[in-house]
Amino acid sequence: MIAKVRKRLAVGKQAAQRFDRHRFNLRKLNELEVRKQYQVKIKNRFAAFENSDDDEDINRNWENIKGNIHTSPKESLGLDEFQQNKPWFDVESLGFFDQMKRAKIQWVQDPSQSNVDNLNKVKRGGSRHFRNKKRA
Image (cartoon, rainbow, N blue to C red; front, top):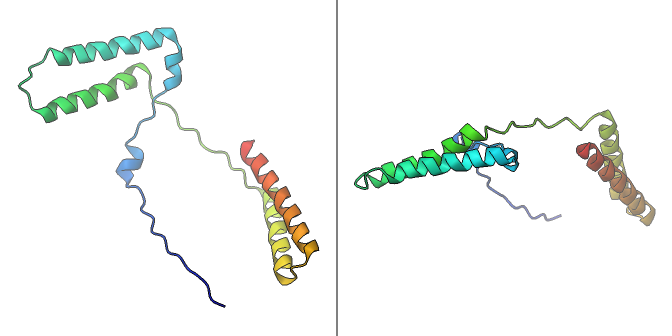
């Protein structure tokens, strides 16, 4: 038997790229008072930036703009809390997984139409179970 093998390289993100990002609580922008407060802070920061000297280094200007963009939402909106995923794979899921595996082995050993139908039925039931467990 001849098999085709395909290799794929995956580059993991560096730790600085993964954890340096901040998620702001953007749901607070739906509140009118918070939104106006945020808009005023942004306008004030950029107004102060425009009044500064134009002779400064362009890199320093960029750092000021970047700092304004990062600190304003942090102050007025706050950071969004990360939600921990609930574990969904339990003993019942393990039973469905084993049942799917047994049906596949039975189909490989005897590829009759009844085994194909049984495999499809078991796969459909297992997929439905896994999907419902993940949603719950």
